[in-house]
Image 1 (cartoon, protein in one colour):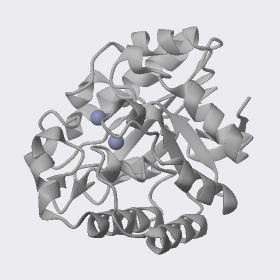
Image 2 (tube, helix red, strand yellow):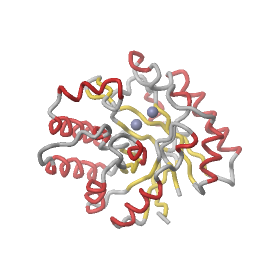
Image 3 (cartoon, helix red, strand yellow):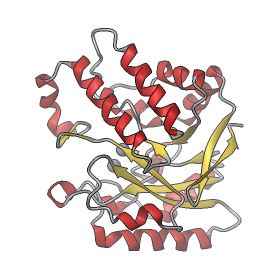
Image 4 (cartoon, helix red, strand yellow):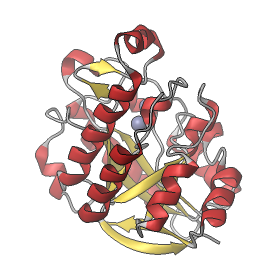
Length: 263
Ligand SMILES: [Zn+2]
Ligand SMILES: [Zn+2]
């Protein structure tokens, strides 16, 4: 099994040492484990949200040190979860860095509003929720078309606190799935949503069915912000994927995608 979404304490809101995450992954029988910590965000919003630009090198080298230590026991990978469109503080040379195995593109901010942050929940009241979903899907569409990323992270994160569209937005969803298919990007199945108010994997089974119908490859991660969170919710995610018809997931090495059996 694989896990392509895991954070480190460098981001300021995760805890635990790298070896603790890795040991937990080994305990669970995970064969490929990728750290994808939050890439540097703009300074005005960085505090407690991401590493600083000067920490990126420390991050990469400490993960690569663990890779050597654990060789033969587990395959350790290194990547970043990069905010779209707020990646100005992320040195562009990392997009072409041969040490990097994969880049997740994620949207956590809509026009500067941290839409997944519980301290800013009030902002939802200012929106028509249907329009908010459409706006979020439009940003994800731009993200996948940017061609900068290997993986589209938690593509329906906007549901995190349980806000649901009232009307039918299926045509917008379909438009997003077409943009994803055309871009060739891999979509992430992220189990963290199960433990948030929405209580559901990102993205929903309905969306995963659309992705399957459009031959879109997936990867899997637990978005762990602590060693105990590694692999949480995996049974449910794997059962859903198998029920829908998936037999393979995608792994990455030096930003090249390859197939991994779903088991
Ligand atoms: Zn985080
Ligand atoms: Zn995220």
